[in-house]
Length: 241
Image 1 (tube, rainbow, N blue to C red):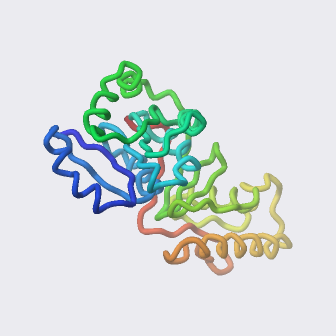
Image 2 (cartoon, one colour; image 1 turned 45 degrees about the vertical axis):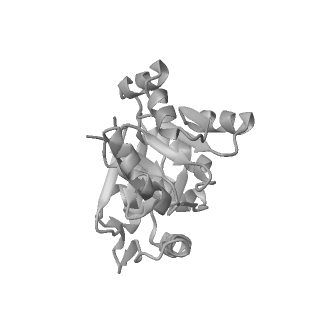
């Protein structure tokens, strides 16, 4: 059975309409954050299309480019407050369609995914070299220099971002002080730089802690270095069909 991914905080409303989708032979998976949807797509879960309810996900635009980086499947945005400017912004950020909600939403969507341009999207070859790192509830986009946690953007300095990237890129292995320092700054490490490195890592840990209730992600290995610790590390290179 075909499955669609619905992003909507009105979960009770969507669950109420689950049977409507089933009438068309379509199963529906509901999530209430863009981050959750991006993680599902990055893990290779297959869907017929992504449906975003702008009315309940007003911050979707800032996350849409990363979603487009990880999938070629159609992304459809629906709203009760349509405007040409918002349509332009949505399409420019990566959506395939921006439409007004209507009483025949199911027929509208099914008609939309039959359009040649939408079907072409599903058949595109995987030519991108995007690197997306996912660890726990952290999503890091290297090319866009963006870090998201539970739909919140984390503002990091260049050094903080690069430290997080390199630690996530080790898949849980320990990076020594010298390995991390030389990877981030590209110069020879000296023991006198350990305190400087420690200050930046501590600041990074505070920023991550401020937006997630999960356990500490960056672990300090005494007299050795640091590692990124999470139960499951996932990495995506390229887009998933």
